[in-house]
Amino acid sequence: MSTALQLSDVTVTYSDGDSQVTALDDVSITVAPGEFVAVVGPSGSGKSTLLAVAGALTTPATGKVTVAGVEVTGLDDTALAKVRREHIGFVFQSSGSLPSALSAEQQLELAARVAGGWGRHTGAELLEKVGMTHRAKNRPGSLSGGERQRVGIARALVGDPQILLVDEPTAALDRHRSQEIVALLAKECHDFNVAGVMVTHDHEVLGHCDRVFEMVDGRLSPVA
Ligand SMILES: Nc1ncnc2c1ncn2[C@@H]1O[C@H](COP(=O)(O)OP(=O)(O)O)[C@@H](O)[C@H]1O
Ligand SMILES: [Mg+2]
Image 1 (tube, rainbow, N blue to C red):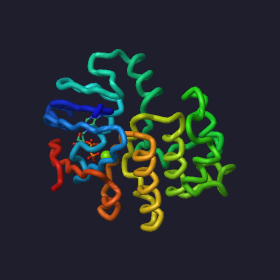
Image 2 (image 1 turned 180 degrees about the vertical axis):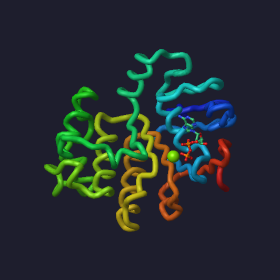
Image 3 (image 1 turned 90 degrees about the vertical axis):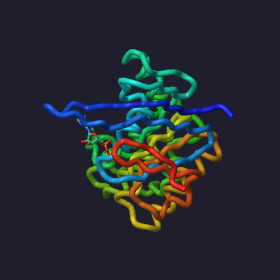
Image 4 (image 1 turned 45 degrees about the vertical axis):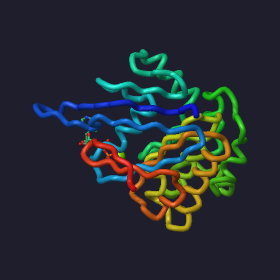
């Protein structure tokens, strides 16, 4: 089976004044097309850094990263931006709080223009999938945190990304909506051969995931 996402022996170190923080410590993971995996772990353990590396936002000092068949280690910023634009759907931990003058529907239209087209779902279909049809004309300022998060998820699915990276998608959602949203993410991965990685604190949604990993102090291991 081909791999959509592969990190091999990746280490990321940040210098924090005089001290060094090892955010990722010799991390290896392979995610196949159509697979939806979860990463759990305490705050500060390196989960967001893992997504940043997988999403070609950060290139690690050591190790090898392959994204959608492209080895990204060593690419310049322009080439990395192209990989992100063409292959990656990103739901940032903070995407629910980004201010915008654009309505939900306009945000998706902008994303489609950047991606060069809608892909398999139109904006209206995506808003329907995340239960936001009735809020299509609303700007983020008049949406709840959970509603903004759902728009962020719809936006990440525009343009048929091969890789979906999602940081804490249920943080602002109630239990029922959390199950719905994570089931949707899993179904997108399974139905359309997308490789998905979700960081979460929410153990109740892990049943939707094909594999679960735990991050502790920058080290990633499978959860039995
Ligand atoms: N840009 C940065 N500069 C310095 N340290 C950072 C930076 N980003 C993350 N870190 C540190 O790296 C570690 C992992 O952070 P992060 O990946 O955000 O963890 P998590 O998402 O699991 O909370 C933490 O100790 C954090 O303080
Ligand atoms: Mg984080």
